Length: 233
Figure 1: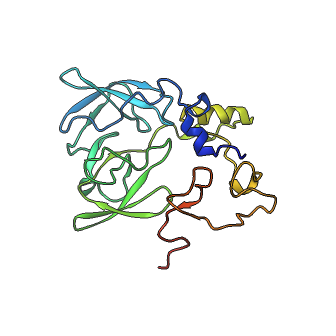
Figure 2 (figure 1 turned 30 degrees about the vertical axis):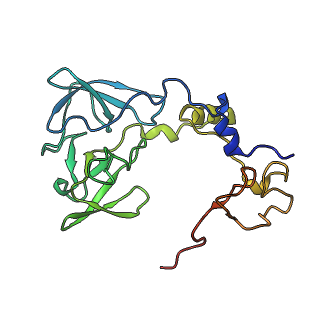
Figure 3 (figure 1 turned 60 degrees about the horizontal axis):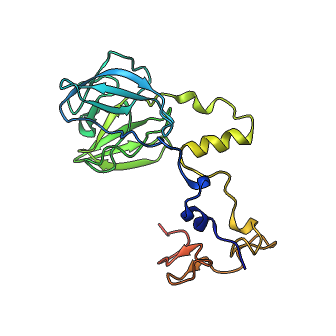
């Protein structure tokens, strides 16, 4: 009898694969369109690498947004209003080239998907019609809708990677706080009893393509994939 695969153990829901309580209980979004929020607090949240800023609006409601580098309590943040200040939310069409931006929408209205980790930022390279070309932190150019929104500035907390971990146990708890298991071993490094790709040969020894109807103990690799390999340009 073989052992359960990693995804089978995760599906069981034991403490090893369960997030810490209160880890992702804060909703981070852009706030109300056209509103002006005052920064009333800067908090460190377990589920985010970057600090969050707490905004209070005129109707005394609150929301949380990712804090940019240099923001402080008492500053104003404008949502969907033309104005160049730290943390402001603007359309990509209204952001000039070369200004650092973060928390970028992949599609208009999705609330921000790109460039949200501590210390990261992107820039608008050019505007072409109703599209905007954005240079990501990885130097990859991405074409997005000019109606997508982004925040101005650089994500705060950029020094998070400069402090050494010193020991593996600290990295384990750091990953556990954001609901990620660590370390992760490759299947080819395991024994045959642990994984279908296991064995001392250190290669799969079989195709990575797996049928959709394969039994749970064999369902690893490319499951019902249409194709594999590098796509020709």
